[in-house]
Length: 163
Image 1 (spheres, rainbow, N blue to C red):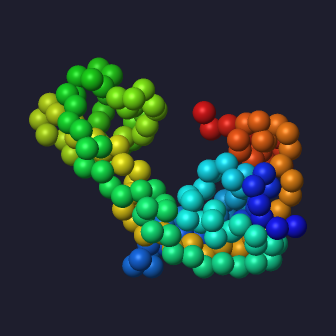
Image 2 (tube, one colour; image 1 turned 45 degrees about the vertical axis):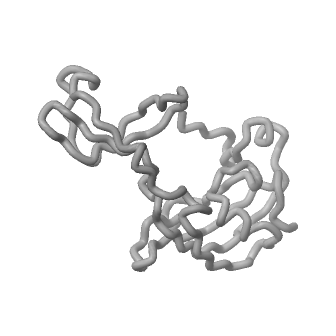
């Protein structure tokens, strides 16, 4: 069976930046499973995996445009500290859920504290980064009707939602 839209794919992978620093890996995390064609993974990797079969190994360099996008300076924002819960400890590196002006949920990262101001960054942490994947295709199967309806793969023991 080949990887195609509406297939559930199991991968082993490692992800490094251009300096060779390991950013992420499936090692020790259990299988990484996704629904192909549902934009569950970055486009640059999904495109390369189309047509592959179990056992195939692929190394692919994904540009920021095909990954998490370029960094956008307008996603940097200064917000007053009193917008956070009273008494909340706020430190550089902390992440919070926020709402974009368009009403979409996004995650922002605190990058600087300046008196009563908090500078947050709404860019994905890997925006502007070239992604170097080493991937091994472990398994491919047809997606269930429920997986197709939900737009993502479910784990071996049923549904897993992080939200």
